Length: 252
Image (cartoon, rainbow, N blue to C red):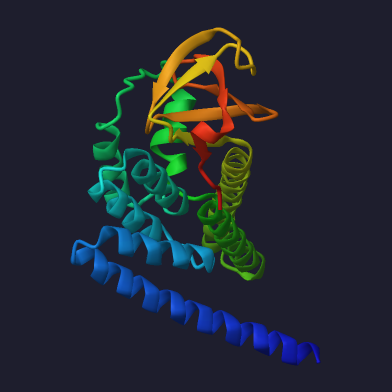
């Protein structure tokens, strides 16, 4: 009985993937024809099947951009980059879309480690770092076994040194994979969807306004109280805004 259930699940997944591929092709054709609203509808149907990809969100971002919808385009480009940080097309289009936003916020100076993390470590998804860790563990084990079985002193020295480097690389990739996973699961970023929103100094409607944000600006979500979100900008400013004015970028 269990095998039958697993077989049915497997068949269902194959059919779902095939349907998603067909919808994706139809949506792309609609996009080429300039029917952006219809294309978005089909892309959203694919998203509902959970057959998501960086390409799906990249195309969604493009369709929204063609309709001059700044916030949704930025939101989907960001999701595309979460799934594939090396998606250069999404990265370039995100920069273009961000130029349409009204807010110009300068980030705080980054430390050397923060620059290393942004320019190198974050280029790969935490799953990729995990795969690299598995690869180095296998390589290190093979090299150590070769060292143990070898009778030639020169080869033993080479196998021993390379196995040590492999295990050091294993430790490094494991640490990076853990840090990237921890950052992805704990850090909540969001895009402002409201045309204009007043950020307050407390989670109440009668509290003082501290600054104003506009559509498309990215914020870091720190806390939630009732229907209010505590947010932080890259320049260090902190405030509260209503939950329905932003949309949290989903992690995968």
